[in-house]
Amino acid sequence: MKLSMTLVALLAVAVSAGAFDLGAQRPDKPSIDHPTNVLDPDRQGGDTVVDATVVTLPLVGETGTTAGYVDDYDEACPYTQSTSADVVYTFTPSADTLVDIDMLGSTYDTKIYVYDQNLSLVACNDDFYSDYVSKLEAVALAAGTQYFLVIDGYGGDFGDYVLSITDYDPCVVDCPAGAVLEGEPPLVDGYADAFNGGCNSPEFGNPIQPLYASYFCGKSGWYLSSDGTQSRDTDWYEIVVPATGYVEIIGDAEFATYMFELGPQDCETVAVIQNVVIGPCQEGIITIPGPPGSTVWFWVGPTTFDGTGEYDYILWLWLIIDPVEAHSWSEVKSLFE
Image 1 (tube, rainbow, N blue to C red):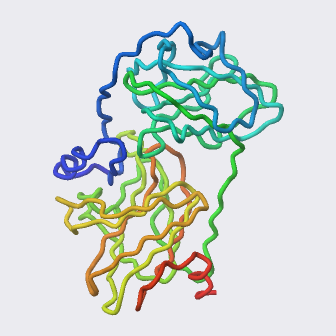
Image 2: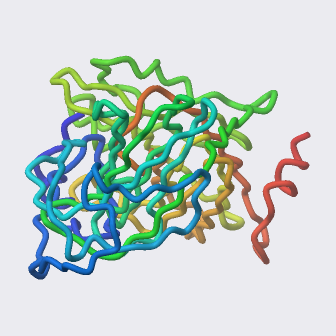
Image 3: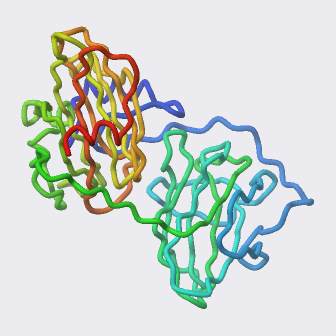
């Protein structure tokens, strides 16, 4: 859904690395101000697919730099016109497998993509983490096929990187019996979010869903909007803080997902007050200290704009009478079993 022009202007202010975006559609990416990349004759290797650095899988914590390299390759995922230096690795799996390729810990705006031995594009990612670092999940590799991994950057940016290639470990979050279901329609291409799109759905009156259940199961994910733009589902909720205490929300999800407390309750000025990342199969907790009787806006959605299909998430709403300490996932679940 298109954001209101006021909200677009508001969110456009917060485009620095690590800023949080509430929108359903990917914003334009800011230009990169970086030093000149000076070519280095004493490089670590892997300048092109011809002299790609050979590695075996799994690979954990490989470090290197793209500084001093040449800009040999580029792919749009989705941003184009990159002039960044790139480094190439190659590997040949011994068995059919699914892998995660993770650049967590890298110090610049990375972009990564995988070619097969015919140099056909297999997978590509620019921004996975909020600091513009890349990750590819569940990349399918065939036994005996040579692959080339290109570590690139956005807009000419370059620097030090950390690379891990590990087996994909699927996460499944089961909805407990008796939980309240979100009830949003399926995220098919061309979807128009008239359900709980909040400030991302002004044409539907900024719909926000009340959240009051002790345990709640929702779905999020991605779809192509009617104009063909890649979009993510953003779920906006409203919680009333009990007069006797705080609200604690514990969540988990099958994909890396933000939980945001938002404020103020005004689409013209709304911003993130606090945030937690939940999933995949990793719980997170947000404690909202009131004031008692107040209304809180709560937001759930993918950390990235790239993805396909739907995934499940679960929220446990814990109304705290006398808050002393955070409760574990097991403690809260046991109260409803």
